[in-house]
Image (cartoon, rainbow, N blue to C red; front, side, top):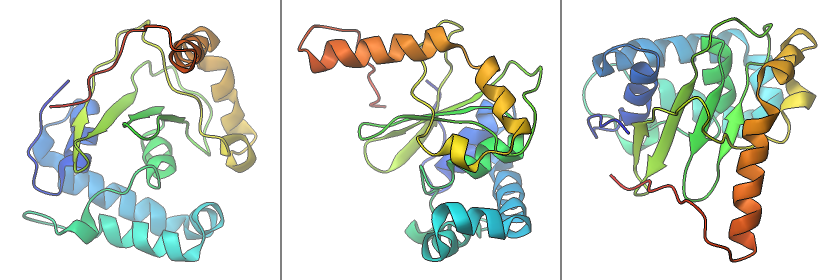
Length: 186
């Protein structure tokens, strides 16, 4: 698990690090997401609803220095935009919810990298490095409804075995059996 500065930009810093960039590139990540949200506002309004779309758009509008709480990254609400802009899966982990986001509008790529982030301690994001056989969380429930036909090729690229590993871990947890746990504290 990586460590990034906790200045209200940590979610965007974590995405930058997951992309192989310096965490100081967080303004570029914000700008990319803002542009995508504005260019595809109809699609994101449909998915999020107008009120939530406005909140998510506001959250990415910050350019320098420590960000106030209204400009912290909103997850999972920003998940679709992250995966779609960077044309790769986003694995999001937290104590409350865990999802895989896939791009909404592009064919699956030959890119084998993903973006993996965790929300920890209720107020901080960190980048994660997943091993190739790590279980991945379920694909967010409404992805197939919102994805274009060409984007559905991602379903063939995502390993069903890794999704099943997650399901098996969850089943073991729900049945009270001991399992490997993820320590998301920093």
